[in-house]
Image (tube, rainbow, N blue to C red; front, side):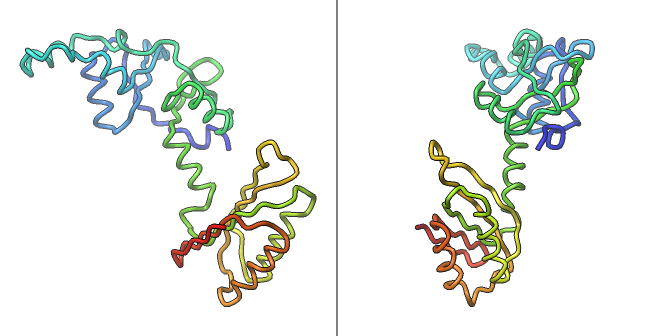
Length: 225
């Protein structure tokens, strides 16, 4: 899961010498929260909703709308942007990028090549979209969350059980228990399961693992253990 597969390559950007009103229009018209800022084609900063709000003439309440618009138009983007922005590379993993965004409390980052040229942008929304796609959520199905011993063949044994009940795999996500490497937590999304044998399936799963929850989306049924 690399950034280059999930980033937006058609990047809306702004010139550093444009007025703040230009940034406001671009952010609003394109429904985005951050703009890369360029000077002579080079990335020199980013400007966000937060920067706009911070530098707006909040104290100019006595001005009429025309005076306020004029004042905003005189403020250069270069005066309000965040300089030396945090960037990521196209060959970073999405997980690395998510960690960078979270650590720095930012909503997204420009993507640059080895020469520092802007080639894309990736945001929290792109990462959310990846999570949804990776989880198989759009296809719904039935998701089983189980805790089981971390040993060779443990996941395969569970998948064999599902197949015996007509199940077909959508996706499997596995994580180590925090501070407890002896156990795994597996999130398995299936479809095609023989619902007439559902009780027997759960019983057989309990012989191999601990059921945490079952989310049966087509039936809108949730079982939390």
